[in-house]
Length: 396
Ligand code: PLP
Image 1 (cartoon, rainbow, N blue to C red):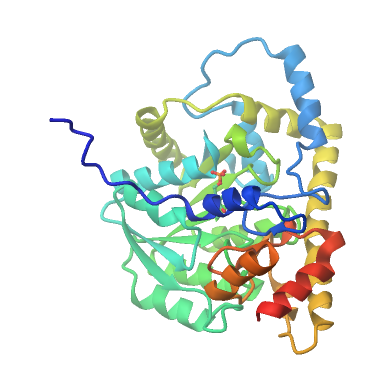
Image 2: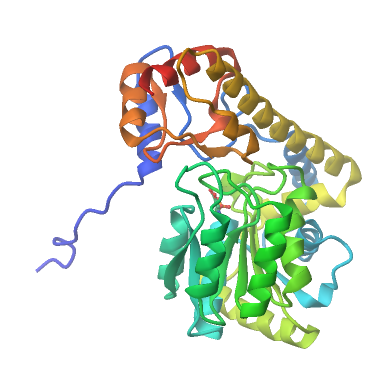
């Protein structure tokens, strides 16, 4: 008998399915606000100029394609440490491991927690990036949730969040926090709230697990690291999973890192040895190209300047699109007020559109939005903001 005949078909990825439908839509006027990548004014996800320049340089200077060390390129790891922690943080208390994207970082962190910190559970915000729960379960961890988004679906229910983290957790549990630009809601804690969160994590003995996929998309590169740094002022131990898919536009090159902060240099070295065991059993060692690009850009002052300017352009474009959309909706008679979008950070926001309205937007107007109502602000075409606002007002 065949072993594979009775395997049930898995559900297709919800968001990727929307993009397929968008591509097949023959209407001249259409807009895709569903995808999770940055788009420029022409609707394309560009290769950054600093990346092209770094690749040019690598083409001329790269000597080998031999394996990288298990924990990745030393220059890349150094650059990641500085981006995350600044140059003051003691380097011997932070072990950086290069991973295939932020997803790889999360899986390495999950496996590490499951094997070295059992019986830890991981608490995820509700809602969160859809893959978090799948990754943590695959690592064998128990997954729980804590309250995050308020009933208004546009602001943080901080009281409920603190109550859950105080009452539902046990010491030793891990708490996943989006370091900035919460996906899918765009709702981030304030500086004062980060202080309270950090204090709670420290006093309850919880392990901070920070997912940092959008550094530079919120308030700026340094400003976006403020929450993480507040956590580290209170907690001696933490794990950061960072991604350079978005802020270097290196999506398909798979560039990320897991950074483990421990209480002493000796504990850091020991933890690193265990992280390497996890890597070895998962993918052995990370891909070279993307990490080399990031390391090349950040080792060269001119390329670094270019990168910061390009990233800032992305960030400001998103902010401008938020403003244009909010202003456009104000002109639609009877439409709800969208000013809350101005307080939200990063590419994503919960628009407040229901699944039914999202459906209608797609069928009646050719505007593609995820069923949860999440919109990718970067997907808005500046020339068609009026058209978009009329469509949104029509279905609401
Ligand atoms: N974490 C969050 C919150 C994300 O939104 C994403 C990507 O969309 C990731 C992690 C994973 O990033 P990567 O593509 O680098 O694996």
